[in-house]
Image 1 (cartoon, rainbow, N blue to C red):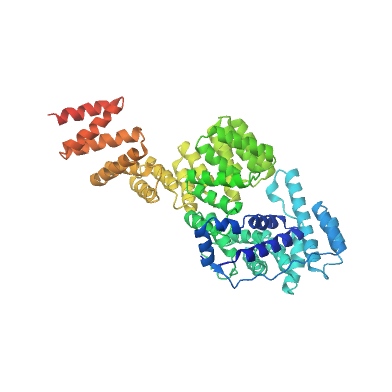
Image 2: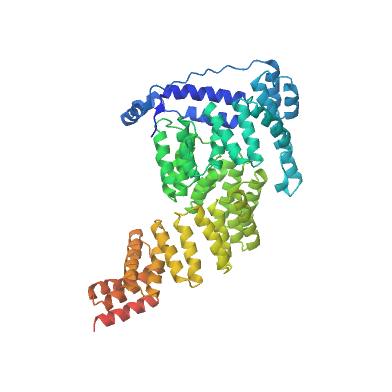
Length: 541
């Protein structure tokens, strides 16, 4: 871990940026730094934990000092313009500032930013009026790009105007230039979280990170970047270290909960989400993920409480609609669930969770065409989202179109190469197409990826047996049996393992172990018991 500043220096820096971003109408970044400020570890917290105090003392850079002081803007025109901005009178705001843009940097930013926001408002209106919303663009982009590009080349843009220029470059798909501009912004405003988030989308794992500022905020970005790339173990480790400095940070706790969710460690994720809601009971961000865990665990009571609480707190956000949709889905009221997912999409047409969950619901209702369209919309929003690719694969697999399903599962594997479920799905497709070697390779990869459901090892055992790999089949069936016993699961796979092992030990002359397996088959009704009688009769000869 890189050294962090002293707690009082972090506090001064976050106080400065919270006020700075708020004054310049960058409310999301102001909210983020403000909540991080409230989550900062206090001196009384350290008194109760000697280890935390020693850790902080050992990893503190005592030479780091934050020296900026916040100076409020008292220009009368700017004060009135900011009020107009808050009232969403963007054109009037820009008009009022027109004569100040070359005299005052704050005025220059608000002048151009209000025009940008007016264009965003017009774009939203056009999308609402026109069903073919994918063609809508911000009508102010061309003019803004021309003016800001000229100022950029003349080196007349300050940090905030550079940020706006970066947004425009991103919106016009000049991504490499946007990345360079955003990095310039961070060197001037290292606590600008919105810019760090933009870089999460523009940087890849292959990119060098030397250009980023060597600031303590880089640790937050690195942890978040690992979460985006599904490097969940690294993410948890980094964020848990940062928790020493930000003990009650709802952002860090939320990210840890999401990392455990991505890693399918649902019990741990549930604990962190419960801790999050105890600190921030009125939040709505990430509640859709929390509801997914309650849905998977079939915890109807808790999911009902969460849906009611979310609906009471703020019913007009996509996350609340997804929570309520999950509740109705668990109650098998799929039409109502779809209705709420559609509400979420009316509030945010790019709500990835809503498109994917709606695809699941259509699949439950056997509406294949609508399921496919929902999943396709999800992958258009985020081509790296494995859930939508996996949903498409499942849809085609259910239709018996294994070649198509294989393609979509392979796209899911590209996004989540260490997820056993993706490899299991591919293996099943290959098995149905009678490509046993390819199926075995996929199941082996799934097994290497710590297949928690134990599907891979049992299917591998059957495939090894089918192709005559007796020793490998025996070892795999034994491993499958151990898993079932450890998890105390009694199912068809357990009986298949017992039958195979009883026969195998009988052939090898290991009568004692063959009898152990055969006796356990008496716990089953049906053909397993007949098989046990047959094996026992052969043992008694």
